[in-house]
Amino acid sequence: MEESYFKGRGAQIKSENRFLKSNYVTDHIEGLDEPLLESPNTQIFFETPKKIVNKVDSPDLSMTYSLNPYQGCEHGCIYCYARNTHEYYGFSAGLDFESKIIVKNNAATLLEQHLLKKNWNAVPIMLSGNTDCYQPQEKKLEITRKLLRVFAAYRHPVGIITKNSLILRDLDLLKDLAADNLVHVYISITTLDEDLRRILEPRTASSIKRLKTIEELAKSGVPVGIMNAPIIPGLNHHEIPLILQAASNHGAMAAGMTVVRLNGSIGKIFEDWLHKNFPDRFEKVWNQICSFHGGNVNDSQFGRRMSGEGNIADAIHQLYRVSKKKFFSDKQMVPYDLTKFRKGGNLSLF
Image (cartoon, rainbow, N blue to C red):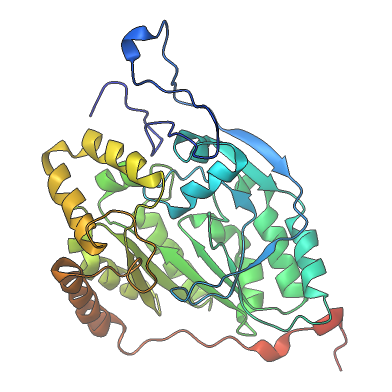
């Protein structure tokens, strides 16, 4: 690992923003009087959006609506597909994504306004479809907790996916929602190898904490599953059986997976990270990712972009199917109960 490596950060570069006319670059380092790039401290920016619930049209995703209280994510996962969206705000998908966090303080108010619409019927809303709703800033700001209070008050179904054990702080609300089959939680587990996790997902909870989080949720009656994602050939693909077994043993009721894809600026960010951390296997990992996606690391083709294709992808899916059958064959998530929704804010008990 290089001496200039930014510990605690995933991206090691500030990638160019395709929407800006000019960008600072370090292509000719010999011409610089001082370094342009330093390990950045986290900065918080507040936004007041007019709406918070987003319709998801992708046929590759089971969710139909999502809600993201934060834009950008301190977790710093190097592969994160949400990085590209940071460019819409004039920031980079690299270091800016994990150090310049945009906060939507009015999220709970906007959610309540949405649920009060006359034409709205109960459909599960996912927290978060983009960035983690339990990232580090949530500990202080408690926006996700406020959102859960709204979901609980209106008895509205909600899904959650996170890498952070902070979700246990809200166990009281989750248990209340679970009592009426109104919540599904998915804990994302990419690897059980802590050395890999520290550089792949530097500011996330450890794998041990995530497994204990699954156990606590399950013991409390909260339906919980895992997402083993993304699968990166040559780095974590061999862990599929171990991850599914550990999750099942700790109480997970369901499992899902996706393979890695590196769209937009993420390709350059990941390439730089892979060179710096795994120079000995760079070619192998990079070429196998390309084999998933028609010869490229980026992929926008529905059906292929999240599952991959080719011999290596087929072998990975076969390993996943065998593992899921072995450890989850007798398990399933309890369906949402959509009949509990208090449409229009009707709080009557009769």
